[in-house]
Amino acid sequence: MQRKKKIGVVIADNHRLYQKKIKEVIASQERDIQVLAELNDELNIVDTIGQVKPDLLILDMDSLIGYGVQTIKSLRKQYKQLRVLVLKDDLDPAYWEIAYLAGASGVLNKDKIVYDLGTFIETIFDT
Image 1 (cartoon, one colour):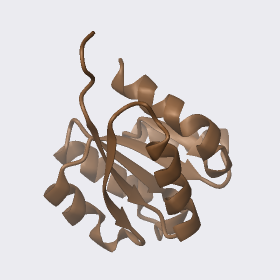
Image 2 (image 1 turned 30 degrees about the horizontal axis):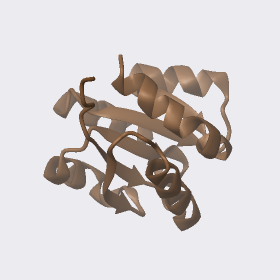
Image 3 (image 1 turned 135 degrees about the vertical axis):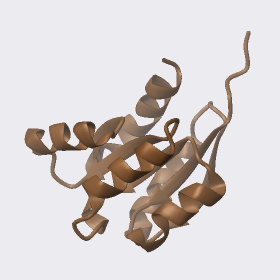
């Protein structure tokens, strides 16, 4: 059986409770996933991604002050292999389209992290 590549993750969410929950879900996965950095605001996202070079950015769009779409576009242009999972409190279908067009790999309701995060990670890294 072929060993799966380790996945490096950066969590960008200004809510410590969600950061903790995300880390708990990641720790419960069979897949080798490592949290490389945690950010509480958008100020250091681009620099941190450049320094730690993660495979996945879990990005709370509600913690970004109006720059979420531009941040995703910029990161995806600069780091082609980076996958971006957008977290939102509300999931207006129109927002999904905006996030995907910006380059997001997926959009997940923050209330569904416990149930869907592991499946999301497996899906995008096994395709």
